[in-house]
Image 1 (cartoon, rainbow, N blue to C red):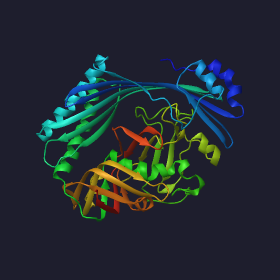
Image 2: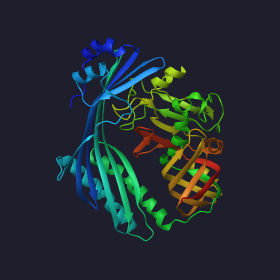
Image 3: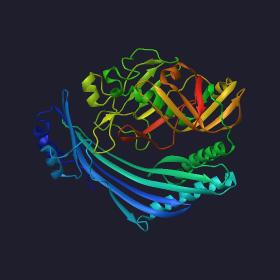
Image 4: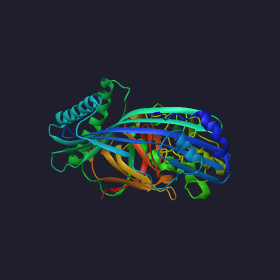
Length: 453
């Protein structure tokens, strides 16, 4: 489907689109998702979802307006010029979904079946037991064409594969584990299968913690965050509170925090829109602001926020290239791209050896933070008890809770082994967008740990 905007028509429509505003941007999109669902290696559902439309954002000082239509082309743009679109936030037509009893694309099914067979077989060989599996494999093609009142335009296209894996071991005390992978449709089959090893390792480790893990008594413990997936704590605890709409009006924990020291001098946190992560990072954000590297915290001192055009206009803060939206139905808001803790000076093994007693956490089921008071809770999916720098046994049902400012003050060492997650991370904030995360090994002293109920 051709989503290209007729730039001559955009120029002709400028007067109508600007009245009574001084800025507009137009977001034309076509999104197609082909989903294959497998249960115990058998393909049992094939779905195609399609969605297309145009959204227009207009602003002038403190006045703004966003509306959309679920069609593309000249007629759609004319409707938006006449303000006949659906206001942002209103219920709209559901995406068109078509269910098929057999696949329409041989390539997709070959890729899907190869992923399913490889992951399932590798897990069963490693754990020497049967597993029940469900795979949802989504082939997503997302075309966008963006233009604005400054006569700038840019076309973008992502072609990704999202693999959601649910696995249940037949061993006693086992429960369902989940892992999500993010792949690129341009990759060859060898690279896709190699990336699947990430899911195999993680799912086996999660199963091991569930079956063999012990519960930990409530208390305060030193914690090592190890691996890229631990970057989700940085994303939640520091990233969201530093999005500019979280600090407007002095309501967030980091409002008026520029220049204030909040953590160790080893703590530098960055949001980088130029990292190459499929479906996340592009040359421009959804408002045609060039993507950039934004230093949020430098050596423990807050240095910046993440903005979109709306929040920048209302606060006189510069644009950072973080105006992102879920689809043409949504107006852009400040969102992270790839957020990570920069690597520090310490060797990973040296940090672990400093842990006399405590936990190593390598991945998380979920977590959340209250941006107003900073309270948080996280549930590790893979955690181990450590004594004198050596892993003793796996843990299960762990819950880490506390306050963001307290956590940041307790960072005692940052490793020099920064890596970026290869998983699919979907961040929810009224809208859903893909994000990237990364982290080196981090030593944090004296966090509160309880039992997940």
